[in-house]
Structure formats: structure tokens, C-alpha cells
Image 1 (cartoon, rainbow, N blue to C red):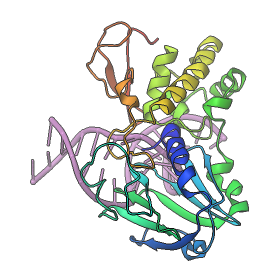
Image 2: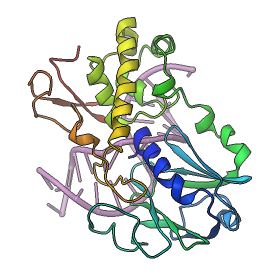
Image 3: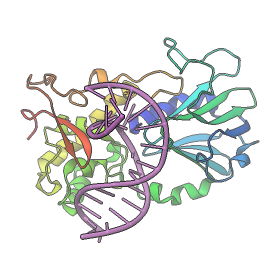
Image 4: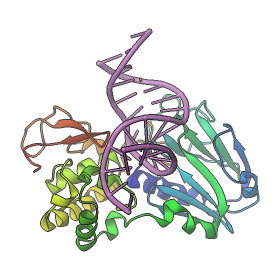
Length: 282
DNA sequence: CAGACTGTTTCGCA
DNA sequence: CTGCGAAACAGTCT
């Protein structure tokens, strides 16, 4: 579910509420959620919150709590004074004082503030490990550059190294580019004017340059909208992201292209639902 | 009721 | 090593 803009939005939303707070209790409400010694977090203070691609890491002194939301994970903060921190309007299941049936983990802080890890499909992971080990995690060590740091030279080289794979699959590969997921890969391809089912090896240097800019602009715009809420995603205070209201192709099958008016097409590429404009992308 | 679909990652196989 | 397809799981939609 959450891609780079969603995870970064959650990180920014959590920062003012959680950093500097001491953890009083950690309760797992599902046997498969929580790896490592969760109880060791009790008594530690959250010193920083980092993000590596789509992985969020709460740093608690010498310990780290690495959280991956996968498809349907949420991190929702509730203020400790009994008042709802959340803005916006009440909504089914989300505004009720948690935990609810999808709440898998509850962090309670010494000031009574609470952080809920909700995850309908239970693909998400929460792992406690020494903070110095985080960089060594295969997932973290293997991450490619984020769109912000992406260069045309790097992309051209990697596209050739993976010339047999389709572009969409390449863009979703976190070891090549970190942070893109199904929504922003489609949006990036549209913005660059490139068809997502092209073989990576056929992408010209000019198209690679456009892809770099397109990825950066797409992520920037998504951050400004606090991400995309298809269904489960919420910010740290329970609000939806609004990017999909300005999306060019994602989930717009049959609707007119915002640029040329032609109907948006949907196909399956690499097993993933893929959207594009056959008139604007080549 | 069956089958397709869903934002991610990892694993096994060719 | 590259490149697929499936699996992990639960719920919604057609």
C-alpha cells in the first residue's frame, strides 16, 4: 500500500508527537506481528524517525523498531489527553478509540499517548533490532537511490543492465529505484510519455532523462497531497491523502486523458494492474 | 457463489 | 544473475 510519499507523510506526521516520548508499554495483538524483543522497547525514548525507501524506523536510543506497512498497514497516533488529535470528519472504524479488529500492535507512551499499528492483511512487519544493524538489513542495504537522488546517468546504466525486463517492473524494483510502487510507477511513466510495457533496453537516453524528472515531479506532487488513499492508507493522524484526485492515469481506466482526451487504458504488466494513455505515451 | 481485484516484498524455479 | 509467477492474508467488488 504505502509508497514513498505515504510513508514520508506518516513520518512527518509522527515526528512532533512521538519524538522525545518514552515508551511505557508495547502490546502485540496478533501472534504473527512483531519480530525481536518488543518488550525491550519499554523504557526507551524515541530519539528519531528515519525512512529508508518504504521502511519506517523508530530509533529508540540503541534500539530500532523497523516498520514496513506493506499493503494495508497503518500507523495512527492518538493524543494522550483524551482528545482526538485527528482532523477531518469522523469515519467508520477509524475514529473510534482504537484498538479495533485490525489493530495488531499498540505502543503506549508515558504521557498516555498511543500509537496503533493496524494491518488488515497482516503482510506488514514490525521488527526490533539494534539501531546499528538497520543499515545491514538486506532490504536497506540493497535499496537503490530515491527519485530525489536519481540521475540520468545512473538510470541509463541500470536500464541497460536490466534491458530484458519491462520498464514497469524495473521501476517497481526497490533495488533499482527506491520508493516507487504501483501508483507512482504508472504516474511516472505517463509524465515521461513512455509506455510502461516497453523493454528497459529500448529506453533512449532522452526518455531516461524524462523518467528521472517525471519520477521526481510525481513524488513531489504526491507529497503535497499527503499521498494516495485508495482504501486503507491514512496519515499519522488518520486523514486521507488526496493525490488520486489529480492522478493522470492510475485507476482512471476509460476516463479521458487529462492531456489529450483519449480514454485511459488498463493492462496487466508483470502481474500488476497498469494504466496508461496510448496516445500520449510511446 | 465463484472469481477477480487490491497500494509490497520475497522466494523458488527455469 | 535475470526474469517470471506465486505466495503470504483478508476483505471488497462484480
